[in-house]
Structure formats: structure tokens, C-alpha cells
Length: 148
Length: 173
Image 1 (spheres, rainbow over the protein chains, first blue to last red):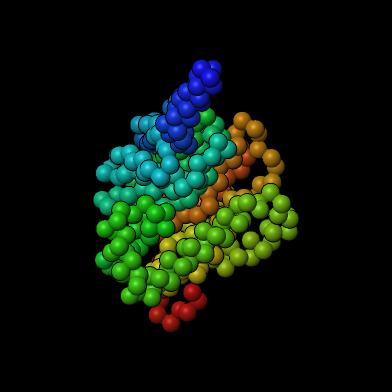
Image 2: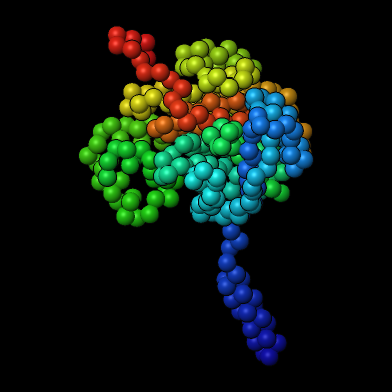
């Protein structure tokens, strides 16, 4: 009898702990790099070497990393990041799975939408590059990548 | 709430992200505005189309390309001066009431271009990023350069309209 009661207690405790444990929410880290492209200089910031090939698409002679942040995204919460020039980046996760994230990426300036895009990023996979925003004598680009 | 406000918030509305007061205001506006309902329906339809296209991407036949290129020919616009030649998809934004169907078709084509432009498998360590749709704002236009296994997709934003206004009598839209 005592043994049965002991087991009942253990089972009840285990069940209680299981119920108390919140369901693990899916989350993902998204790395944003802010890149300033200009013709007033030459060369590619060593931190941006992986992007050098993409930069051949543009007409600028110099690319420098001027900012960056890692955004932690979880279900249905928008992560925001201030950008140079009074702009703001919003990233909203529409779907998060271990294989990838469907994200709504938007850039605003002074409350006005500049671009809204639906993208799919794979953790550790390719980034997307969003940019061309006027900044000083050149342009700003964002590299947005999901981290493993 | 105005049509313009709904236009700004339509994605958040569709994602269920709009806070309750704004959502209720949007729904009141939608109840009385056929044009905004039409735009909402277009985006809902586009979302379904994109999900279907994305899920079926791996099995599509190569013969899709000619159809995509034909459709691109129908919707392509002049790209901004600094857009390189490798861009194969170009989308501009016009007054949305006139181009909801065209925008939906354009976004679908962009999605298809992103998916099918290159068919070589990507290296496992660099899984491709995909752009399902892209849209500019009132004073910006966007051009998508589809990604390849070795180059990520690029969304170019120009903050001055890339598309000149149609001259009077031009009904080619």
C-alpha cells in the first residue's frame, strides 16, 4: 500500500511538473548587418568579405559595416531595429520551424513604408540583402541572415 | 481610418499582428470600402498562391521558365540606373487601385523567379534564401535580383519613383 501511494505521489509530481513546464516556443536569431556603400573610398570591410561577390552587382567602390545587431525572434513578436537616417527595420516571424523561418521584413522612414517583403531564411544559410537607401554620399544596405 | 492607413497596415492585419483598436478600425473601414476589400482579397489570394508555389517548388518542370519570361515581359518596367543587368525580375509600384491584379501576378512571378532561376542544388552549408514577395511604398520602388546558389537575393529600393506617370491617352497599363 505504501509503495502504491509512493508511486502515485511520484506520478502526480511528474504530471504536475510536466503541466507546469511551458511549451517550448520556437525562436530564431537573425543577424542584421548595416552596410554603407560609397564611392568616396575603396575596398571592402573585412567583416563583409562573405558579401564581396554580391557587391559586384553595385556601382560603389567601398563597403563598410556601420552597424549591426542580432534580433531574437519568437512566435508572433516583431523585432525592430533603428537604422541610420531615421529609418526602422521591422522583422516579424510568420512561421518558425527548425528548417527555416518565413519572415516579413519591412523598412520604414518617418512612419512611411519603404519596402515590405516576405522572405524565407534557413538557419546558417544565405542572407538576403535589402538596400539602396540614400545615406550621406552613398547608400545603405542590410544583410539579414538567420543564425544556426 | 483611411484607405491609406489600411494600405499601410494591411500586412499586419493579415498576420493578425494589428492591435485590437486598430484591427477593429480596419474592419470597420473594410466593411464600407469595396476597394480596400478587393486589395485585401488580392493579398489573401496571393498568400495562398505563394504557399502553394513554395511547397511545390522542388517538383516543378523546367518548362516553367518560358512562361515566367513571357509574364515578365508583360510586367517589366524600366529599372533604375544603378540596377545591374543581371536582374531578371523588376517590379515597380503604381497607384495600387489600378494594379492590384498586376501586383499579385508580379509578386507571384517574382516568387517563381526566385525559386526557379537556378536549378543547381545549393551547398548544404549555404541553403538559399527565398523572396516570396516584395512591395515598395508610396515614394519608393523596388527591384528584386533573384538569388542563385552562390549569391543571395537582393532587394533594391529606390526612394524616387522608377516608373514615370502614364501620359494621357496611354492605355497600355
